[in-house]
Image 1 (cartoon, helix red, strand yellow):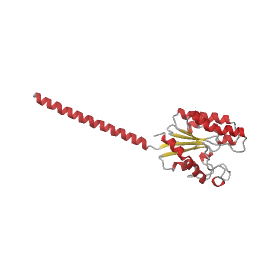
Image 2 (cartoon, helix red, strand yellow; image 1 turned 60 degrees about the horizontal axis):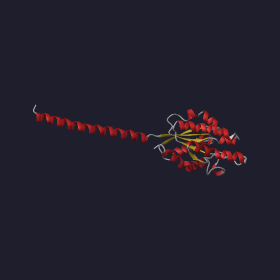
Image 3 (tube, one colour; image 1 turned 90 degrees about the horizontal axis):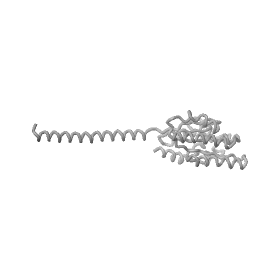
Image 4 (tube, one colour; image 1 turned 120 degrees about the vertical axis):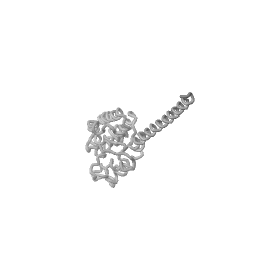
Length: 222
């Protein structure tokens, strides 16, 4: 084969190799974009971890807090991990199976029953601290939903209890929604006959008021 012919073949091979390289890079880029799009399209798992306020005590299916929140139009599955009557310590005892692996975000709504039973604030603090530490170790963005002491408790108890949630939020660097029942507490039209649990209309208000905080929580996942 003449030198010119050899040179021509080499040039053809070089062009083919360059074209193949570009094609392969393009295929890899498309595959990566597809994987990212698939990840973005994945339904997020938001666990609402709480007591009867989360569980939906006295309410029919479809109008409980996690269900109403889920219908706000986001591609998020809100898992109802509420258990009526739970104290903060009860919640801690079931954290590992209530907040499963793969949880993307967490709302912690516990501590109301501790207050209603007049339990020591330090006990609730220790249990909630352990819950928030577990969430931190699992790298789960968390929104802490606070509560306020009922007016029939003395000023010392009310002062200690009302500072509990802001203090924990600062310590663990989590988002705080100061009062879960904001806009609903003590309004007979928005509560069930027991005066403690929101009715269906009350739940709508709870969700509407908390929604900006939940949206901010979900933006941390992007």
